[in-house]
Length: 172
Image (cartoon, rainbow, N blue to C red):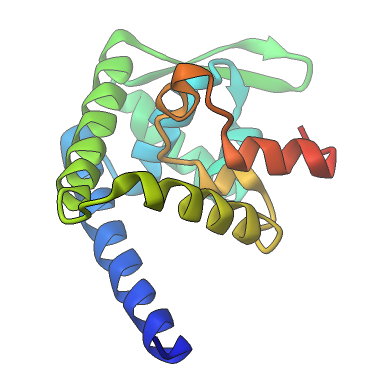
């Protein structure tokens, strides 16, 4: 297969899956895509400060503060007492439910797409290699995982390829 064609096929696949996955997750959560990413990240890392949360989902500090104001107004997050210089952000029960719905919708889109692949066992190592390779080109691995189902990634004692790449670079 010609490399240009393979690259084009990969691009179309990634773009289509990304559009479907993010639209489904945001619709299920009932908030913006960045708000959805924040809810998902806070599921795994409760108590992050706004600046750190923004960094993990690719937002500037002012944009993260505006997004958090919106999530707080909707009753999805709470700001808690300062921990050092940062105010800890935690999910409310409604926020946890919205994050769960987002992850379920994301999973449904991806599982449905995988039904088109007859030999999925061959796809997994290719995707792991691709993620490890891409990791070096992304400024923070967390950005790659902002809508990840982290527990699903490490189920059955599997190793997350992005987390492994982070550890190899000494960033974790």
